[in-house]
Structures are given as structure tokens and as C-alpha cells.
Length: 56
Image (cartoon, rainbow, N blue to C red; front, side, top):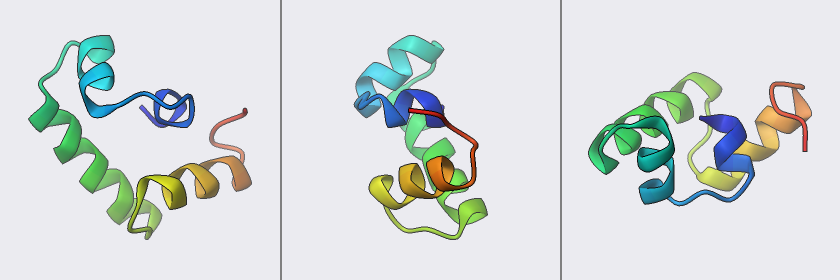
């Protein structure tokens, strides 16, 4: 999910790509933000890139 997020996918696009609802995407993103200790999409992407979780 973080890789797609870094590519600029919207919640709707993430849901379509992962075969889940937008609500499920929001729930997953909330859990990701909590685990990464960030509070936004941009911060999650920056953290993931900085830590080598995602490559751009």
C-alpha cells in the first residue's frame, strides 16, 4: 500500500488496485500512520522513502 501511496494513488484508486473498499483503505492508512508514528500521507511517504521501505 505504501508503494502505491508514494506513486500518488488516491484512496479510491488504492481500493480498486487492492480490491478493497475506500473505507478499508482509510482503516489501513490509519494503522500505517500509527505504526510509522506520522499523521499524514506525505509524512508516511517521506518516512517510508527515508527508511528504505519504498523506493521512488
